[in-house]
Image 1 (cartoon, one colour):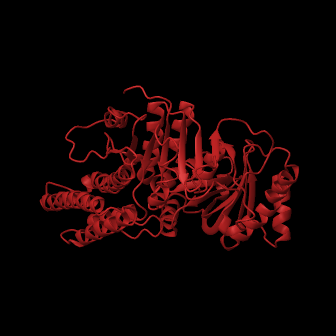
Image 2 (cartoon, one colour):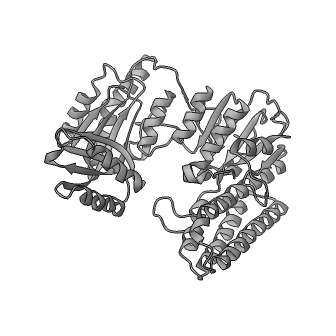
Image 3 (cartoon, helix red, strand yellow):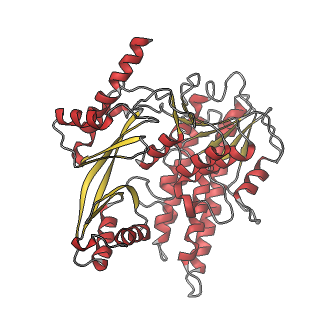
Length: 474
């Protein structure tokens, strides 16, 4: 790869990129717009239509195709994707010629994908070919459509605004060669001059082995982090619609939250564990190993430095964030467990087989409890397998929430004691409380229907007094 001057690699998510026209004169059009490589996601909602809805699980083209047999319902869904893409770029492209170019790009990609899926469906109607063996490849193909579209559109928009930009398509569309991720990135950027143009890079990158096999929909942040490490970026930046704050402002009030400002990768990992990802944990690991700091910024406030994430220790102990996640507490009670090895390993093996994400766990002499982030039907399948393994055990699954107070250094703050007092004053009885020796988080397990009240009570006790002291000192 050619040598890059000092530059940053910056990622823009789908919700933010859907408002790209608002960023032309701010984020993209800064005094010196160059020296930046942008990694973009698909426009908001497009990947949900292509794969499945991230929250509800409603099937998109991928899900419909997987269960289609000879039905062409997926083809209608693909046409809806094309309509949604055209609507998305119609909102951000003001020039009619640019809109026509983007419309044509969508037609080419969508119809190409349609022909591929029809041919594959026909091929797999013969007994020697199994559709299941091709589904991961299809998932990758469909994912790349969204990112290729957004990169192409943003490049059109910036060039029209007088900002030199180039779409760098890493999706491998009609590429007959196979590459590693690093090779794919290197080839895509081999003739890019970041001092004279902005590279708009697709968040999805086709590579040997496939990104989705391991990262599924976290692939764009993996591409982002690898690109930053490979090019030796001075900094990696993630642009969101909001600042990384001490809590969800919709829960505790916009006047009550504060921007975190600075934290470290340990805190970022804890946030990921509770479903509030500042960055995918594997992407964070790549940046951390490369010694590249990460900045989480508000895309619509480009002059605000946002929150810097690196390995620097805290200047003083502080609770930086209160956040929570709904979970199921899967409890295994077995009287014969005392002194016997292997129970925990078996439970873990079953959870791993069903791809259930573990948020936290506790155990004592005869009980093992895993707090898991999974739908109830999946938890029930795990229960069935465990009953076969331990027919005499008592198993239960309870709908709870884990609410955590997180910070780089919580020493001396008496977070557990103060948190319990705050919950008691709010009339909330915790189911469990735990703190690890690393002293970066304290977890309060509460009934699911009390999660919001718990976040509010803990934020008022553990964050807002410190915020008021900081303001008074200033």
